[in-house]
Image (cartoon, rainbow, N blue to C red; front, top):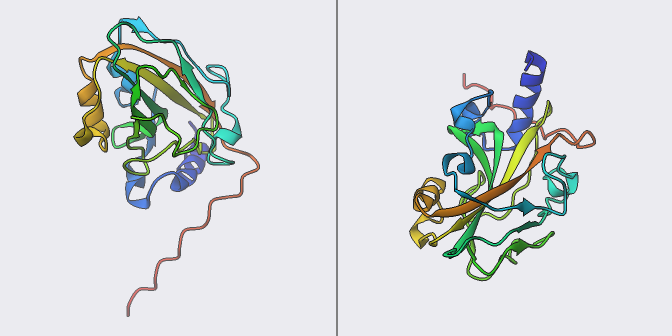
Amino acid sequence: MNMPIRLAAAAAVLSLVAAPAMAQVHRSNPGDAEARTALDLMPAKAKLTVTTPAFKSGEQIPFENTQYRTNTFPGLQWTKGPKGTTSYILIMQDSTLILRGAPILHSTLINIPASVTKLDAGMAPTANPAGSAYGPNYMGASKPYTGPRTPPGPGDDYHFEIFALDTTIPDEGKSDYAAITKAMEGHVLASGEVVGHGIADPNAPPPAPRPAAPPAKQ
């Protein structure tokens, strides 16, 4: 990436995360170990076919499903997990931008009942399946879907990953991504993903300017 694009991307990321975390955000490089998603780190023998009505895998995510517009959940559907499936978990990650040594986390929905294989398009934040719970994303703990707000540049890849587990995530691990993935280890029966490509909305207004620093005391 050339320097102008790097500077533009860095400026736009200001609207992504809190200022104290900015120094930790960087773009991944090919083969970067930090860019490995949860699916990369916990491969499964069986595969789930994951689709969304909003876009085909590898295609652009509509702006309506991003923070640039209405931040509408795109909807997901997946094939039924193998025998022994107790619950599903959704993890959405941006593998292009790295925060604190891992892909930026946009959504987690844990303990989706084994009888559920579809999340409706436009699902309201409070309409998640009974028994499921939102885990963390980069905005904090117990947060609903937070769509892309891709910085200017070549665009980012967003992974909507579904895991079939033979267990559920305990209450004490719901608010921490590391605890969630640790609880998943050894319990993933099948997994799959649909990947969308996000770009900056060319019609979006520029981010609000940062507050001016107070004058130095004399």
